[in-house]
Image (tube, rainbow, N blue to C red; front, side, top):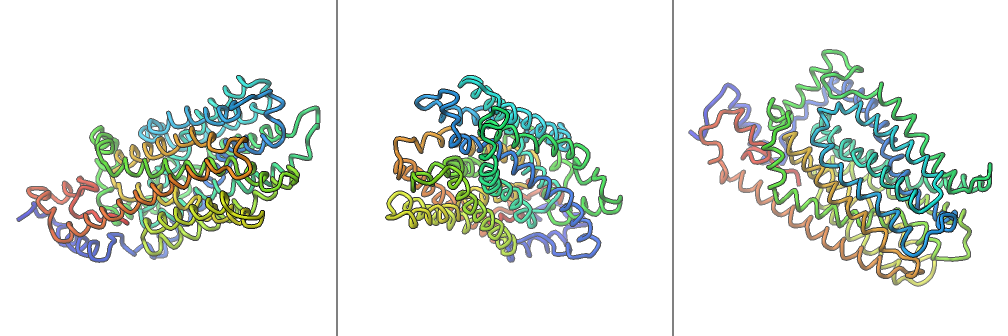
Amino acid sequence: MLFKRSTTDVSSDKRLAEGLEGGSTDSTDSNAPAERVALRKVDWHIVPLIFLLNMFSFLDRSNIGNARLYGLEGDLALRGNQFQTATSVFFATYVACEVPSTIFLKKLRPARFLSSIAVLWGVVASLTGLTQSYGSLVACRLLLGLAEGPLFPCLTVYLTMFYTRKELAVRFSFLIAGTAIAGAVGGLLAYGIGYMDGLRGLRAWRWLFIIEGLPPICLGIFAWFFLANNPETAWYLTPSERQMLVLRTTRNQPEASTPSAKALHRADVVAALKDWKVWAFCLLNFCADIQLFSFSIFLPTIIQALNPDWSTLYVQALTVPCFAWTALVFCGVAFISDAIQHRAIFGILGSLTSIVGHVMLAAGQGVAARFAGCFVVATGLFVVAGTALVWLPTNLPRYGKRSTAVGMQLMIGNSGGIAAPYLYPTADTPRFVMGHAVTVAMLVVSAMITVVLWWVMVRINERRRAGAEDSKMVGLTEEEVDELGDESPRFVFRT
């Protein structure tokens, strides 16, 4: 006898067999009418708000690229690489607070914490429009990074509190879509605000910062009263719906449902730090984010280089369809990924597609071909990073390990933003060969890591199916087996 039998052993053995043979341990009982109603309430109270929060967060960090076209460098007398440095320092404070914020999210009360940082970064973003020197610009960027840093990793962990891993990719797609749509909205706003140049004696780039900092202040105040801290305290659910939401997590993710699995333990934090797969995901996201941040910030500059005769307003308008396209693609990929319950293949295809786009931009002939390259890059822009970000937490059922790993993944991944601003110096115009070459190399590495992780997870699943890891269950009760989390011989990795 491998482990101590309990009253739930029969159903658990059935769950293991179904999971290893079919690749999923999630129940399909979520089609029950009452549960669908409760889930839709959660969707309406979480998804639109996290979409908007993330959209304005990305907008307020990347609008410095639009401000550059409206004379920020000249007005602040920036020289040499000072613009790139001001862009880069944002990530120093941004990445520093990601791991601590995810680890202690539950203790900080998610709804209150997320609301507070939204108000804070909105104030800092608006004040950036009043800067008068390089030093004050750098100070604002550092403070902005400190305020925005916790948002994305905390929202990622927050989603895992309400949704099963089978449902996560579609909801996460709206979080990523907020980032992509921010580029399109940023281009439209920059186009309109360009006509405010000189209004009340302020240049257009100052109005850009001031105006775009106001929405997150309003959203933060609204979120303070609207968001719930967890399913157990969701004010918009009835008591029976709250209980149902908690029970469905138990039903669909037994390794995540024990009292210990839901709490923060030092051992889980250490387990994340010692898991090589977590570090591989960190490196994967670093490579992907090099492209994400450099292309998102410098797309206006890249398009301007296609034809120097184009006006600034025209260039701002041309960025809109690129970002709209990448949002549409990622949402489509997320729906398909959730439907077939596979992640890796989309990350690989996204990397290969973006590589083709960068080659077109660096070596293409004619304005039309190179502008088309922008759309090809955009096709894989968020797919590469976004797929990895949803893939890792769905394979870590224990809260402590999951929150630590997500923080690590985003901290190391986003540190790519420190180097990204230096990849497209003005001196390299019009083809920016160095920037495109470095990005292609990073995408090749990300694709290779994805292949390795995919292969390893498939092999582990095969070993567990064959019973090669059953020795881990010797002498353990049913609950103790589930306490093993992703190390449990019953746990099936999503690939």
